[in-house]
Image (cartoon, rainbow, N blue to C red; front, side, top):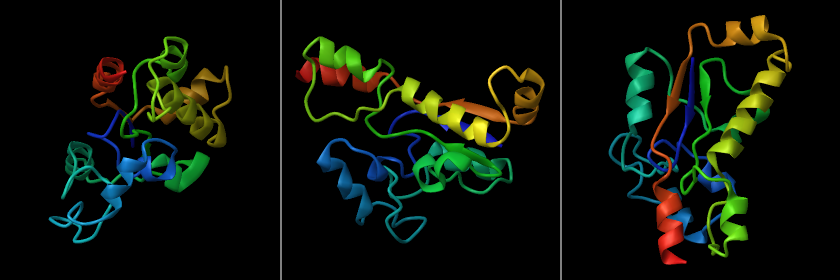
Length: 156
């Protein structure tokens, strides 16, 4: 099982399902996805991402984006990454007048989505044994995140 977090370098399709810069919609068109999938896949690549290679090397299917499987997650894990995501909470940018049409998804948001998935799998708050079992054979992947914090701050 893999739980993946990050930004566009790890996003397997969550951006298209969330609010954010309208310019991100272009990943739903060719040439994105044409090299490996032969169709658009909402990945910021014309083929696979590093997380796709990791999943395949572990004999797991490619991770579904969280927004596609909703709060139930998937049997082999789920990808929470969103293109344009920040390490710092969105409210920081609002408070410091550093906002424009940015993705209001942070690492904290992604961790909140993980909590929702865990709750649907019977891992309530405080049940450490049950929660621990869900991570026994899991890989927690934290991909690139934080570069967007600098980018958003420098252009505001």
